[in-house]
Image (tube, rainbow, N blue to C red):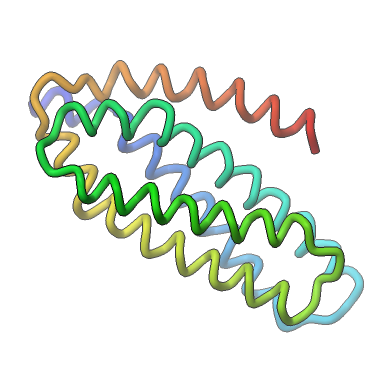
Length: 162
């Protein structure tokens, strides 16, 4: 188990995504108070990045990670909660992407999305990932390769649609 843990695995890949998105939310927060045209353009660009990253990330988890973990662990309530959290995040992402104006409500939606994601990440990092790593028969190192390949495909699709 120690050798598995020392190699980058599916959990470490997903957590890298979490950290990257957190940096984007932090950058957005720094711009949120500014009303300048430049800040507005930067916010729009950041939000597009955030939404693209989260859309791909949630799809990776739902297609590959969650089904494998669901098979490998007994307690699936954590996975059920994660899927409900994804649904809420997707709803907010859709609202943000449909918004025409970057105003106080837009900023509020981005802030709430960031809070949802923080909560979700904390549960994955502290509860789900340790259970996945402890599960017998779950090859998280091989899954990392599968996730990386699928992520490339999905990012290409998202960028083509942008």
